[in-house]
Length: 251
Image 1 (cartoon, rainbow, N blue to C red):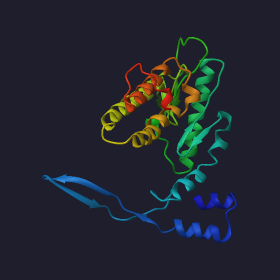
Image 2: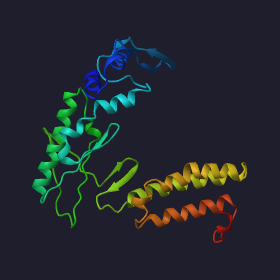
Image 3: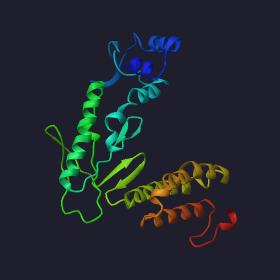
Image 4: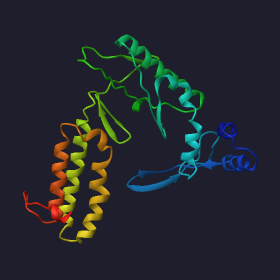
């Protein structure tokens, strides 16, 4: 099926034959470890020929997978699908709970059927629904896939951002604060052992990147102030400054 999709997007001739050679007659083995009477043993499974999917751990694997599911949006176009690698999110809109529930159930049903047709499996353990509305929520939507109900969540992690049902991003701010508290502890232990340049490298690699990721979304949340207080505390720690001592001249 991957070769057919490559053909449909214009990959022909020698290029297609190279992909055919790359994907055909491949096999894989699984290595696993187990404890046998106190001895740790490593075992390799028998080779199994791969007839579907893309080679795991390969450089071309992610690109081929994206091409493989590229037409998913055609099945879900009505629901504004957002795809990133193997993560897919949809938006179902309705004027009332009944309509919204029906639309959301239809979106998940279409996604399930698409995966089934493409020999993929929709991971129901990671499938969640978040309900948004302008006013108070007196009742909740109910989403079904066959005989199973899809869990309703108050918040969900989407591309590294925690998004809650009120779109206040307090959950993400709290997540950032927990990470910054951990980095603060690390810097406090490092500052007497490494140079300021090394501390700066750590700061920009971890602290600054954590703060700046998605800042345009969560930076205005009511709990974001604590994150920036922690940032200042970390900088003062790096510079051996007292809690209320200014450090702007060092920036």
